[in-house]
Image 1 (cartoon, rainbow, N blue to C red):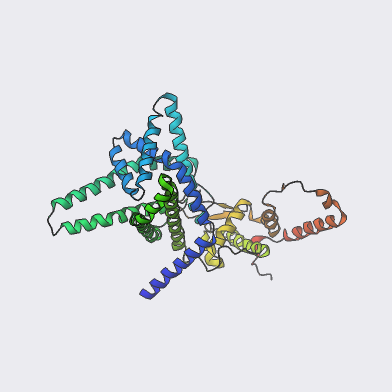
Image 2 (tube, rainbow, N blue to C red):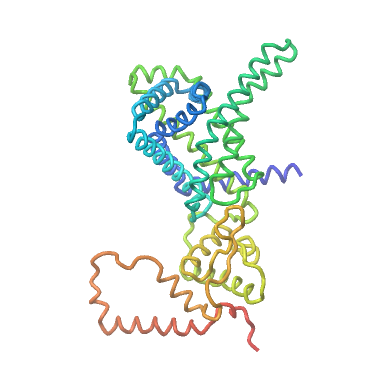
Length: 418
């Protein structure tokens, strides 16, 4: 039993690492590092402004200095910028405009993070406007409260360790030592479950969240204990050294975070994923056949009065890997051949039904719509060359080809003739 558990973990890690290196996640980490650099002052200013409104400013600054202990110069500079930022937006229209700019910058960063998470999860639909506003506003107001609670817990444990005896104090000190790992792991688990626009299971986010939380703390410790190298770096670049070092820290932090997202996705979809490379390009002819296979099952279930078909059911019945099924369904939905009846609710598993009367869904209609998707205006292309006799023969042959395929209904593809 233990050997199977280890093998399962190794397979999950191999798939996650392969997907992480084959896709553009590393580029996304670099892009998010740049966005974070631009948004960190407005983002911290929003949190500080809300915290000061509730009288929590001291706890917030203490918490911020703790998490930025590996970057004390950067932390102090950010706090100075934030205080200056807040002082300069405390009057009339400037206050409202300044807060709007801060909120917009922070919302754009969170939106970029959400889109990156959704790309890893192969999700193309984002949250609705109302859901976005509610979730982001809740994030802004709950974050200071969570920080204060965590700071209070840390202060309470520290005070308790001083008051207790020699035998109990070591246990309390051990709790204090592991509390940053626990808190950071809980934060990552929450982010992995709430940020993607889909339902993420707790057991799928548990392992990746703990791994990311521990890795982040180890990154902090590595940076703190490598002060000899940092000191020599400061001797060369002076005070300017804080900026590239901070960017490097942001880069590694986002790599850890996004690898955890990829591991979470792989963990939840392990049973459906195959070892097919993520970057493998499917031949056009084969893609049409796979699309017809998926559409055939959806139409048959609708014809027989069964429930809408989920991607997991399609994978089970066809053997097509989950990420390919999801890609085929996106194309079919965009071509208005199927529709998602889950209403975009992240807590509900997507379910698909035919997008129109199944009597009108033929192989020819499917091929024509799928091949017609995309833009046609690609520049100054001389279309006069398409008006020759030979070109007319090509276009006529294609029209005849599609006309013949329009006689074949998708729902009847696997029907055995008498």
